Length: 322
Image (cartoon, rainbow, N blue to C red):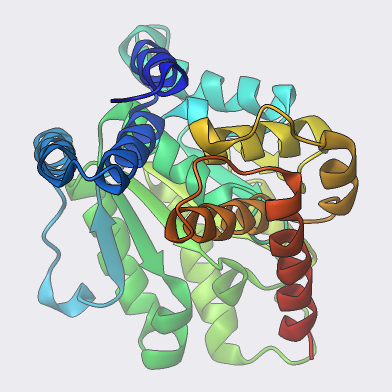
């Protein structure tokens, strides 16, 4: 049977409306039961989770043939409680959600809710996750524009494709995420710029300024210094992300390990060693520790289990810059 900690974690995640954490703990419980030899019960739990996820999915958008491979539509089960960020950033994201939900009230006073947002920060710090959180909290699909493919595959007709995307933004309500945005948002004064890319940026500036839809437009970049300054004026808000502080790293580890975390966890050493890792790096390290524990038939993970996984993540980072 489930342990007391697993039951308490399930109940807490349910009442906190943290659906993704609830599913994660339930799957951990299924793995625990399977290890105990209760394979039928474990399978029943997995099937229940799969059925519930299918029922709560937001309808995804079917795109025109010309945009196939350029726009990816998905629903999201990531609640705002899954975001591990600083208080100021959380407050501003909550404001976006509040204004969207109360947009009719704002419009009655001639005001518009925040719906054009620029996200800036290092890779793996929560920019894409923020878009997923907004999609879940507002119950609308998340549509990701593959900006790098748009530029490389359709050089010469990128502006035309952009017009199609903004037409879609107007016709199909949702969240539209322009990821790796600096691919088209680069400063027009850069020495290595070409005429085509200047035209693309000018087109984007025109399209986003003229857009009056109710869809939410999000642009995300790792390289703000590359962006043209004219872009910043087109967005209602600019959110800056950073690598997690010690308290955020602790929360990430606790959230990811769940009931597998040992009560005797040497936090000081782990928090010192994990400094400089991004949110996604830390989650990956925890997932590596979880998989190793499950395959080794261990019920608990202590700091000595996760320490080598954190070291591995630093090695991966170094390799990416070779």
